[in-house]
Amino acid sequence: MSCRFHHLLGIEPLTREDISFILEQSRPFQEIQSHPLKKLATLRGKTVALAFFESSTRTRISFGTAASRLGADSMNLQAESSSLRKGESLIDTVKTLDAMKPDCIVMRHSSSGAPHFVQQHLQIPVINAGDGTHEHPTQALLDAITILDRKGRLDHLNVTIIGDILHSRVARSNIQLLGKFGAHFTLCGPAMWLPSELETLAPLGSSIRRVSNIEDAVRDADVVMVLRVQQERLHEPALPLDDYILLYQLTPERLRLAPSHAIVMHPGPMIRGLEIDPVVADCPQSCVLEQVTNGLAVRMALLFLLIGGPHDESKEALHAAD
Amino acid sequence: MRVVEKNQLMAAAEIDRTLSRLAHEIVERNGGTAGLSLIGIRRRGVPLSQRLARAIQAMDGSVVPVGTLDITLYRDDLSLVAAQPIVHSTDIPFSVDDQVLVLIDDVLYTGRTIRAAMNGLFDLGRPKRIELCVLIDRGHRELPIEATFVGRHVQTSDTEIIEVRLDEIDHEDRVMLVERVP
Image (cartoon, rainbow over all chains, first blue to last red; front, top):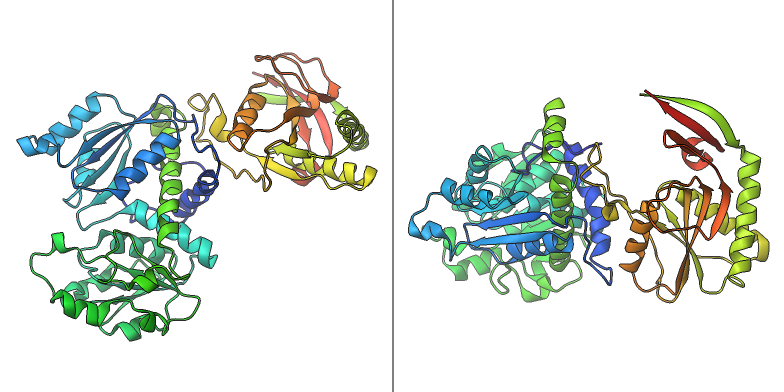
């Protein structure tokens, strides 16, 4: 199978085959993370533009490290130092970056759909590193490979997601990805973060139910995803933090209600003592740090797939031929 | 472009005999099998390395570690290839430090694959020595690389292709000389 996409804007447009292909291609890059010498020269001479219009630490470092381990250089645009502050429009900023001739652009923006908009104005591949409350495709891919490692399969999993699902692009991308493999989702959290429209997100063949009680939500779970309480995205809190902890924190007692083979995931940054009990965060069922390592592998694979092969012209032709 | 078969260079029995000889040469040159590992280059170097390991075991009972190396990420022609290259796993489940590694491939041609393979090995550690074993050496080197062990030297022209077919991949054992005709 060849690379059938020119960008990575979201999980939604991808097929199961596309996803399986990306995950398969991530395997060799997983191995590289354990090599004594982790630096390749594969993308030497290529440049990856990291355009983070919204602040980010781990995703930006992960993409930067992925580029560097492939031998590519990166140019960094960060929210704090951005000329956006001086009033430059998104498209002017992006075109300025593009004029410095990077080979692809990795972009995070607080507006949903911003990477799709930018992609229409550029010839180079665009990778969405998180857009508003829409999608965070590389997070879903790294979660999928982590689940595959731990559970040996992606098909028909019972996936429980706890927290602020309404504002979570991580949840949305994961629902898209695991849903394409027939997952049954249980969403759990304060009522105002669980509007009934969420049930319409489920891809064909998957199902979504909403449960208000965390004890019921974890009972049949193969995978428990704990989301961060995104205080910066809240216009008004759903409920006081103390109450949130009381009702929705994943504690050892609650995790014990789940099957013993259930795994615990968190996209980070993780606030110990808020959405997750420190004992759970460090327990053998938790794969939080594997997620971080796998993030490098998935991002290296994507950079290689999008800019490691033949020149853009031929790839465009390949794309058009599909 | 068509490809026509010109002639058969090796039948199954000859491949067997050649591998058996190569196994003896590898053990002889290294004074035994201590510290020796075989590394098959994907794809057809992999079954060849397994066959050589079996031949060495049949010879003196010693089990030589066998690894698999994918060189895709080390290629120097990635921007020139026609289709999106696919990366496969490298599987070398032992330390290469201070080991004598015998790289195994089916055909030695420009030498660029071997250059890439050596780069890949050095990312894994510091081997004591790297040797190269190929079933066919067809000439036309573009780099100063020579094989330590050669099954057969074959004179070829630029338009000719050596096709090594192995049972494990191609469901038959033979080596063909084929030619590209426009």
